[in-house]
Length: 135
Image (cartoon, rainbow, N blue to C red; front, side):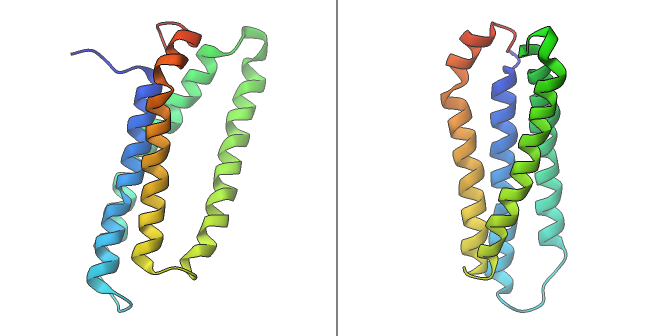
């Protein structure tokens, strides 16, 4: 009955993002290289969007709360630069789509999301201490 901390919410979002690729793994295994249903990417994108809603706005809110008042705008800009770098990184990872099996590629993406969630949960307590009880 206790609301999770901001960092916990971000970890939950990252976990949901990672687990959304289960739909793509299952779809890739069921369909293989043939034509398949649009259900698999639609379901993965819907779940991924829910995870993104846990991650992005909450992270931006954390940046606004944790930054010194005179640096809030700069830190928000850095948040958006990190989003750019994440998009660039996903483009780099996208190259593996042609080099790996389809389900192996989606398992890799799932593992990255789950590992990120684990890292966030591991740093939850130290971050709460550093940012105060409201983080």
